Length: 98
Image (cartoon, rainbow, N blue to C red; front, side, top):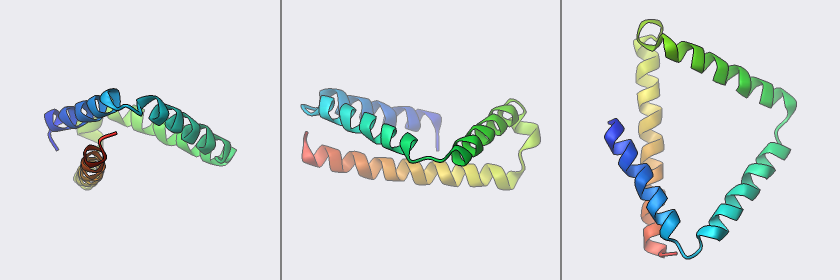
């Protein structure tokens, strides 16, 4: 997916969220959700996530040389799936007109 398309999608999210009459409620619900996730995440999971993020950050510096084509294709597929789900979510938000 092109970076421009990603930027446009996130801009849509920001506009919907910012223009929503229930934006404050959405912010609160997201904050609550994040707190619940943190509370229900074991220390092992937190350590695993930190380790994964550190690996991603270190390999990102050497992205072109150290990442196989399979990994690049996998990342592209994952980004595409996430973008499709985000677009579906945005369409539903637009229909509801918060």
